[in-house]
Length: 98
Image (tube, rainbow, N blue to C red; front, top):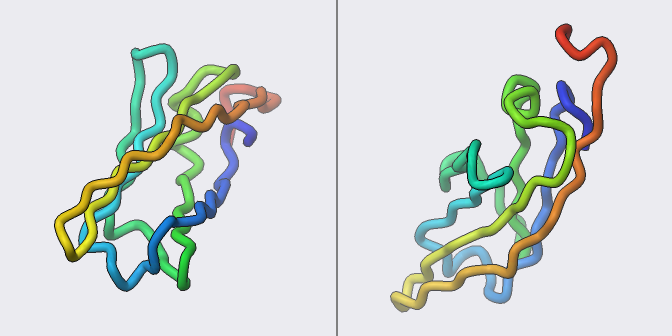
């Protein structure tokens, strides 16, 4: 992903999205800055969930590696936590404009 862009993340789920009662994703960089994407921002399609970051959200991070992890709960009260996915964030020129 590139700073100042609006990337969409599509994630495959281990259960059908109809079973999910709550889902959130957290993006964190070096344990300093994080963004939490809550259930309302996701779109669902079968076994997939997607969300799009706003351009200002990507500008909050420094170029480098961002970690992404999802947590969700199903209608049978099971809680799932994904592995951490590493996402590269590239520079944008000029850095101070959108």
